[in-house]
Length: 279
Ligand code: NAP
Image (cartoon, rainbow, N blue to C red; front, side, top):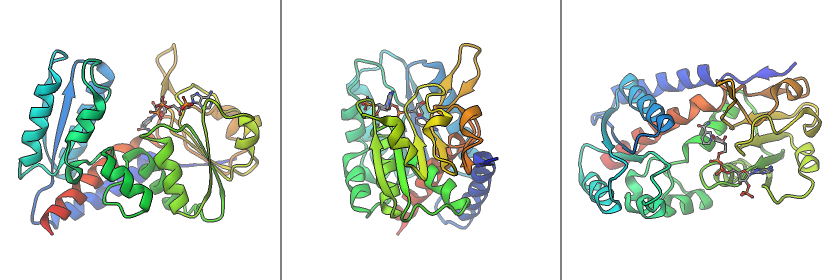
């Protein structure tokens, strides 16, 4: 039977450390959270982020803008927040309405306040290993591995998914941790064979229960980043837990695995941004 990787308790432990760190700081870290439109899932994410800030002692400001907000108006707000002294991190909740160019918005946040680590400067820094911020979801996965003393060094690591926010940076972080990394995507031939080589398998594709037991090596560590809502309203990951769990040595459940770590890493980045500003 696999050991369950408990993202909720790791996240709670990390947040206690963050709280303690903030109580020792002379400057209170500040985060601005911008939401454009009324997407219900985004509203929940934003609410959770603001609550998490309050719980650890981060000052937060929220900007709930209408779906009709123009790109120019959004860029003007970002420009104002870039200059605001009590704001150390700026987060624009994605996705944005279709009429707004996401890349232009990401590029407008100054790298020092880019606590999502999506700005090309921060992406480049992650590539070289000389980074200030790590993207939240892949950083959360690395934090989970660390808590369970799972060292990627010398291991075959397979990442399924190559998005800019999860798959690509995840592969880079595993590489920095000395894993031998294979990245798979929708055009990969023999996906099953690739997955079967994995000592550590990280899946982020957005397809419910896609990875099944026959695709996983005996004793593999399986991290499921996927969040999918089934027709009955329940959440499920990209990994078919029932068939994979008996073969894995460690596995993340969904919900309660990789998910809770993402916001915790955002808090960590905000504290780091405030520290850098204060240096
Ligand atoms: P995305 O931008 O849609 O990217 C999906 C990736 O999966 C793409 O690279 C795609 O390949 C690949 N893919 C799709 N179908 C595939 C298949 N049949 N075989 C192999 N690869 C396939 O998604 P994302 O933003 O990375 O998110 C992935 C999942 O993680 C979603 O369920 C999302 O909700 C979840 N997520 C969770 C958190 C969290 O906080 N835990 C954060 C972010 C995302 P191509 O590039 O070839 O199209």
